[in-house]
Length: 166
Image 1 (tube, rainbow, N blue to C red):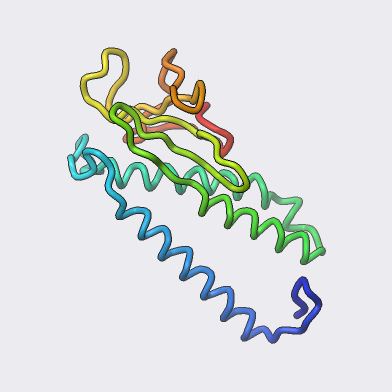
Image 2 (image 1 turned 45 degrees about the horizontal axis):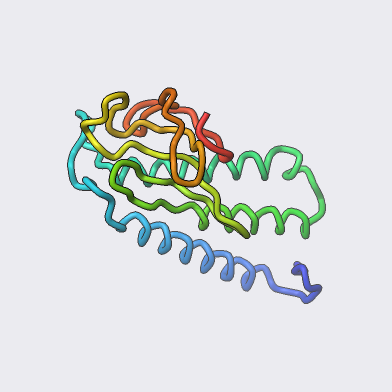
């Protein structure tokens, strides 16, 4: 097997390197999951899912959508290993760039690669006049969500793309 620089690697060495990459990614995900979220230990709904668990699932779902978009069927049919590896690296970089910031009313979900942008907002208070706790809101700007209607709730069914809340 030849890597993108042109040096030969054995299958065993390549597989070991890939395994170590996966372990690092899993460690990062576990570390991010342990980050504190306001009201994170408060159990919501009958399925006993906390805000931190639901937020973790939400961010994983965003990453999977990007992976499906980037590594679709056309990419898998490609015989060009370099292009495929570049796409796989961009997927890994995107997934590692999904983060959140807790505010007083909302949790801001951001994504960053070479620049940071807001993906969506999640309602983080129980006494909002218009929305429920956990509602997903589209970003209107860097600091504010679009408060016209909820795009779903992270404790229930929702549809979201890697580009933002829909």
